[in-house]
Amino acid sequence: MATAAPEATGLIQPNTQSRYEVTRADLPLSCPMPGMQLWNSHPRVYLAIEKTGQAVCPYCSAEYVLKDDSPG
Figure 1: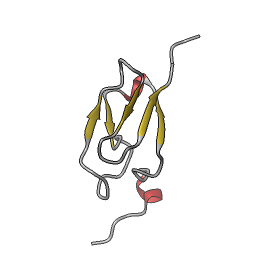
Figure 2: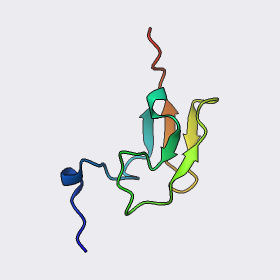
Figure 3: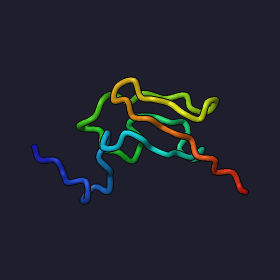
């Protein structure tokens, strides 16, 4: 069965970066994130990032950093 190219689906490839910046709008945070293709990734895991502002995925070691998105 053929899988559509990422450009055709509008989804991004998971696990292509080692560091992702996220905002509070992305919470609750999961890896892979909702906008990523799931067919070639690890199982979804939820990451607690609210207290420290950083989290690392136990499967793919991707680092997530919570950006300060408060009005300044």
